[in-house]
Image 1 (tube, rainbow, N blue to C red):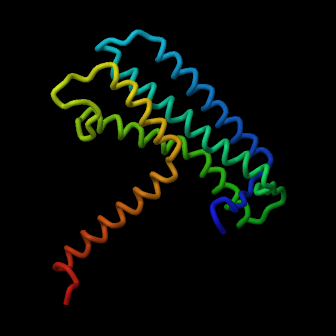
Image 2: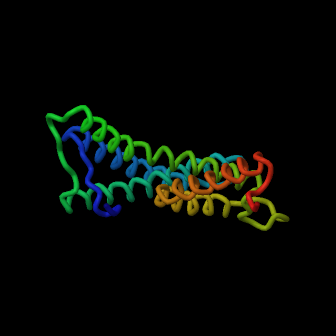
Image 3: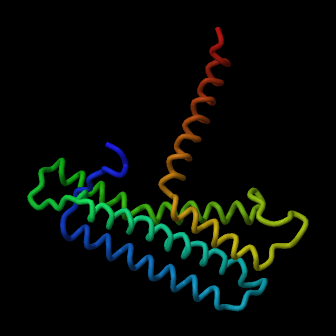
Length: 180
């Protein structure tokens, strides 16, 4: 089954809880983003404000993406509301709920890692010879928005990348390559 054809099993209360949760994250994200953008920026507030706006943009765009995914599944009749479910169906229901519930938290974790990488200079967002200025805040917000919206793809690529590194490490620890 393709991604667009996935059917999600939920209970009525869990699907309502997800919509409310994602909507609250969306409103909080937009509100915090606007609040930070309207604040004066100085050297003391630059990093804390960059972190706050990054997390709020990340959660805003992650919420947009997963709200869209839920309502499109609803419109396409790909959400099944189960009442008297077997144990296996209950596991599927909770798995679907946790999938949607944790995605904004995963996105937030990756956003924090990105901000740390920016701050450490691992990912260069400005000319290395210049000081970090208020543009740092806007770059963090932009990158975090992308991370939030595309967290599923990022997780897939991170999984593939880490699997390749582990395979190479294991191959090297076995005494080299297998070119015999």
